[in-house]
Length: 193
Image (cartoon, rainbow, N blue to C red; front, side):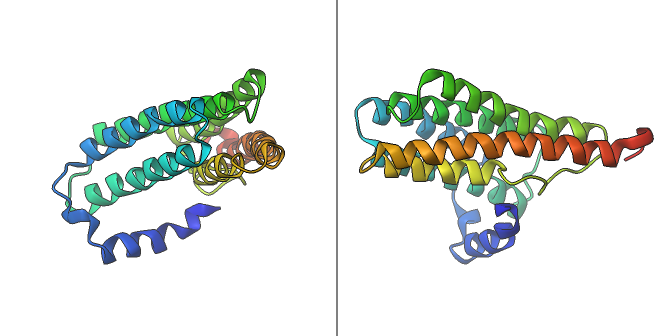
């Protein structure tokens, strides 16, 4: 769903001229990961608002790395691989932080982490077989990141609201897996995309 805002985000990054940052895209990707590594520390320190801001900063850097690569002609297969792999690690770190903040229990965090990985795996596997599943599903990565930012921010004033946001994210992530399986079946039926 938020994928539809990608063009607007690109225009904003063009406006602030993010491609002129004196960093290579892979360095920005690793900076995003380093910031994500601080999220559990903030959560465990009972600083959920700081954790929310760190998740948001990591997400911004995740958008900037691709922008720099496209605008400066630095796209590479390894860069795409590194970005995707780093996204999965950041997802898991952010989900762990939700448990550390006391928003959800470990078993709910485990279920959310699995559902997130399945959403991403379904798309990657379908694309490997020739079917494009981008934009399919209610809870793609952008929506999940936004939900985690909201949940962490809400935890500073209401754990119940934060928990509700996370549980809704879990249910919508599972629904997204189903949506992608159905779409892949339709697109790949008969072995042809």
